[in-house]
Image 1: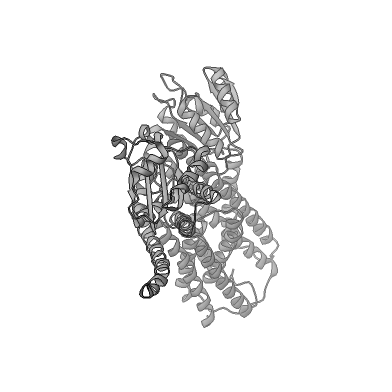
Image 2 (image 1 turned 45 degrees about the horizontal axis):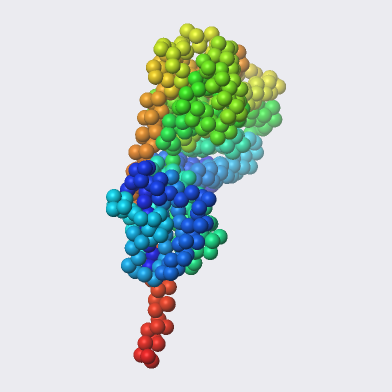
Length: 351
Length: 265
C-alpha cells in the first residue's frame, strides 16, 4: 500500500505548460473513472485548479511511474514537459496535501480559496467511488489541518491585493459597507476590480462615472450600481463615503480647495479616497484634512507587501503545526499497515 | 478599614491587571487570542468591586462615597458597569483592553490613598446628597469611558493617517463606531451629570460653593463639547481629543476641589 502524489503546479511550470494538463470541472468525473480503471490504483482523487493539477493515489505498485499515468490521461508526454512534473512518495505527499489545503503552496500565500477547491475535488472523488479508507482519512485530516492552521496562525490575516486592501481599510473606517455611498470614478481595469471587491463585501450603493457614459453604464449594470455622467460627478460627491478614482486626467481633479466647502457640512462623516490613477487624481494635501483618508497605489501596495511579509514569517509556525499532523497520520498509517501484515506473518509458517 | 475591604479591592485590582496583561500579551505576540478572557477578568474584577461597595455600604449605612478611597472605587465600578453595558452591546472589540488599565490605575490610586483616609463611620444620611453624589460619580464613569473610546479613536486615526496600519488596527472597532460610542457616552455622562447637579439643589443646608462652581464648570465643558459636535463645528478627531482633555481635567481638579471644600462632603 503506497501513497503518491503526481502533479504539476505554478511552482514547477508556467501557465502555458499547466493549461495542457488542466482538467475542467466537466471532465473531472470522467478522469476519476479513468483513474479507477488503472489496475494497480486502489484509490484516487484528482485536484485541478488554475494553479495545479494533482493526482493523489493509493496503489500496491511501489514503482508506479508518472509517465505512463500521464500518458493515459493526456496522450504522449514530451520530455520537455516531463521536467515540470513531480512524483511525491508517501510522507512528502501527505505533507504536500496538508500544505496545499492550508494555502501554503498557493501562488498567493495563505489564500483560502484552495481549501474549497480541495474539498470539491474530494467530494467529486467520493461521488465517483474512487476514495477508500486511506484517502478518506487523509483528506478529512487535510481539512482539519487547513482549519487548524488558519485559526492558530496569522497566515490568512490581512489582504495581499490592492483591491482587497482598499476594502479592508474601508471596513475599518465604516464597518458595514451596505449603507455606504461609493463612487467609482473612471471605469478602468483596476477600479473595476476594486468595485467588484466592494460589491462582494456587501456594498450596494455604487455609482459609476466615466468620460464614456456607455462604459460607465456597462460597469454599473454589471455591479448593480448607477451610472452618472462625468460632468455631474461633483454633484454627487457631497454625500459620498468612499471615492475610487482612476481617471486619465493629467492633473489632480480632487483638490483641497474643492473639498473644503463640501466637507464643512459633513464633519461627522469620514471620507475615504482610493486614488488608483497615475498620475494621481487627488492632491496629496487632501490627506491632511480632518476626517479625510487618501490612499494611492503605492500606499495600498505597501500594505499588501507588508501583509505578505507577515504571512511568510508565519510560515515557520505553520510548518511546525503541519509536521505534528503529518506525524500523527504516519502513526495511523503504520498502525493499519501492521494490522494488515500481522495475519500474513502468522500464515507464512503454515505454507 | 477592616481586612475584607482591602481584600475585595486588591482582588479586583488583580483581576483588572490580569485582563490588561492578557490583552498586551495577545497584541504583542500577534496570536489573535480570544478577547473573552479580558472580558471575564473585568467581570470578575467588577464582582469584587461590587462586594467591596456592598460591604462598606453595609458597614457605614450609606452609599460608600465618603472619602477619596471610596470615591475612586465607586468611580471605577461605575466606569466598568458602563463598559459592560456599552462595550458588549456595541460589540466594541478591544475596549476591555483599554478599560482594564484605566480601572487598574484608579484602584492603585485608591489603595495608595486608603491609609491616609479617615476610618469610615456611620453618619446621618440625606437621601438627596446620596443621589447627588451617586449620579455625579456614575457620570464620571461615563466620561471615563468616553475618554477611552476617544483614545481608541485617536489610535485608529493615527494608523490611517500614517498609512501604516499594524495588526491592532484590524482588531480595533471601525473608526465611525468609536466616534458614535464617544458621542453617546458623552451624552450619557452629561445627562447623568445634569441630574446630579439638579439633585444637588434639593440637598438643602449650606451650599458648598467651591464644589458647586466646579460642578457647573465641568457641566459647561462637556455641554460645550456636545454642542460643538451637534453643530458640526469640529471634526470627530477634535471631539475625541476634547473628551480626553476634559476627563483629565476633571480627574486632576477633583482632588483640589475636595481639598479646598468641606471634607464632610
